Image (tube, rainbow, N blue to C red; front, side, top):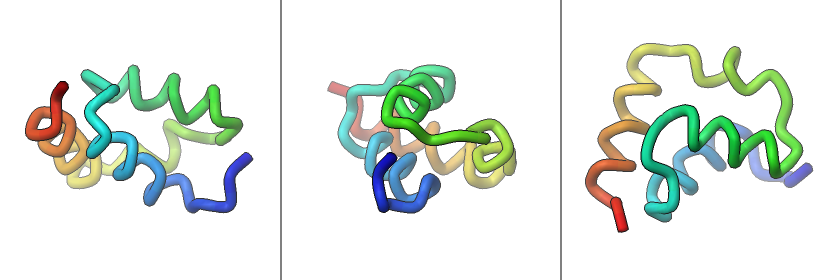
Length: 59
């Protein structure tokens, strides 16, 4: 697993444009070895921010 905190990494992934939605983001984080992803990404505000980032950085 990376040393990057999970929320920071989720934001990075959202900005990279490779994830289309929250499930894509969760799969990528799981593939990178992060655990308890749903618990960390459960906040309504965070999920909204991630969706906005993914939409604005879509490839």
